[in-house]
Image (tube, rainbow over all chains, first blue to last red; front, side, top):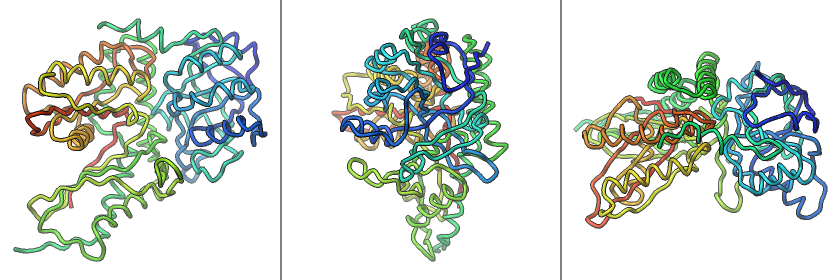
Length: 183
Length: 283
């Protein structure tokens, strides 16, 4: 049974999410991947203000394909999250409430998730055309020069994802493969 | 000896079509493997992920949109007939222009940066493509092309094994590489393996192996058996579809080999996601 969450996500919502839950997100979140994370991180390190308010937000690790005429957005599936591991703890400590990506996270990220009462959600890698059906519109927020890597706001309706790491640090990538391992 | 003239524009048009086609339409071999995997998969989440991947691939083909947003770095294997002369332009530029047009007109993502370490500025047209050319005898140009996503490319590895490692050492390195990749390369994956040659030949063969249909087998029965055995071992690891648990971690293992040096046994493992995109044509 899918849990429906309206964004911005509340602390109560996050507490109610358990690793392995299927979730449908509605509302809006921001996007960003490698190059944007590097810039945001460098601003945080210098103590300078960020060009986008991340407090209470979820960030989706995505670099979309261009939208074909008649489409709100192009195909937009998740990119591998571990590449953002260097930057994620600093963003979580600054008020980011969660991330949407795919794949495993490092221990410092898991610690930062628990420390900040945040959540790590995953979407299905390589299901970009399907996922884009739940994205209703996009707005450019900053770093237009990065092309596909620019920071955008996506308005979504029933965006499908799975809780990979919950606010207690339970991690599906640790627990689930073990159940099916027959080596 | 007759020389056949092929216009650069003809090569450009062919390359453009290959990249648009392979990004919209997943191969029948992959669809077939995904469907049979869904029947065999014991994890309910795994079955659901496989259904969503199949649904995604159906939407992409029907609407002619990329099935994955990472439409890849353009890689081409070209067999260039020695009796062919490219007219009205150059062979290399004809291919780059085909890539440029496909990524622009086909609404494919531009994912290439100019300099790997310092500038990292997007070239905005997905060029340059990686072109592997082999001169063969004949008057045709055969091209196999694919968009290679980097989620899986980043999980690939090469190791200069030495002869005493034997078949067991080869298998262990391949399995270790797939295990280390875990949930990251968008399983179920296709594993391309290149064994032999030199450092760079092994890597090139591994890429070529990912472009081979997964319902094909290595013509040498010993390697064909190794492919089957590796596939079975990988699917016992438990990562499953999207790495969320299950018994479908790989759809296929393809091995390509080459003669090598008396002191060496290089092994390269090129991992490809379930969106294993490639297409071929002959001009």
